[in-house]
Amino acid sequence: MNTNEMNETKRGIESLKEAVMKDCVGGENCFCETGCSHQGERTKCFHKYCDKYAWVLQRAKQYADAAGSTAEAILEAWEKDRDYWYMNYYQDCEQPPLDGKQKVHIFENAEEFQKAVDGKGFRCPYCGGVSTKPGKCDSGLQVALINGKKGKKETCNWCAGGLFKTFGKGASVFLKDRALVFEIFMPIAWEQPK
Image (cartoon, rainbow, N blue to C red; front, side, top):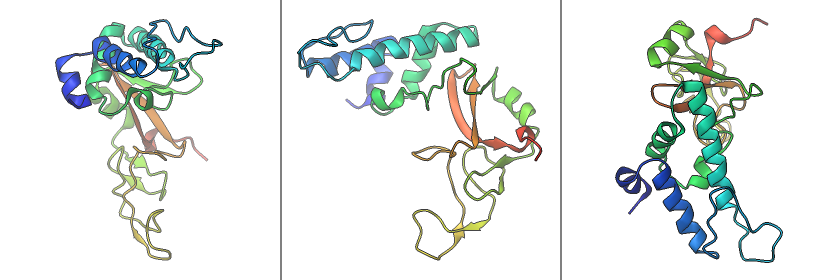
């Protein structure tokens, strides 16, 4: 059963807990909901799966408070979206903290977000052009792509997902109705004047 199939049968905290417990069985069957309880002891437990579980619950509560929702509802949306290992899915870069240090723009829904970006487009962090899409460049500019042949220029098609994302030049958007965070190119309407 793959992660998507598992998430279809069990949602939210149940699917996350099952995944963490499965990984813990590989060590010493050491699952602890409040975080790893074997730290400092001489055991085979070194993985920090339980710490991730506790982190996810805390972060889901943070998002629930911001959305006027419940941690269970947030976690259900995250688990439905998750299609790879939880240790990689649940990270600060995917669910940034809502502590004011990293600006996460919060909107009720996609319509409210669209009004806030004012139809002006999005700045591609790779080519610097203006894209009509928030997460995939369609500026039409020719650039030497990272994985392209040396010296050859191609039409920019940079995406906001993946390893390099937006090089820190994008924005994080949380849509309350979807309970998900999206890393997007910087909206032109939000750019600071130079």
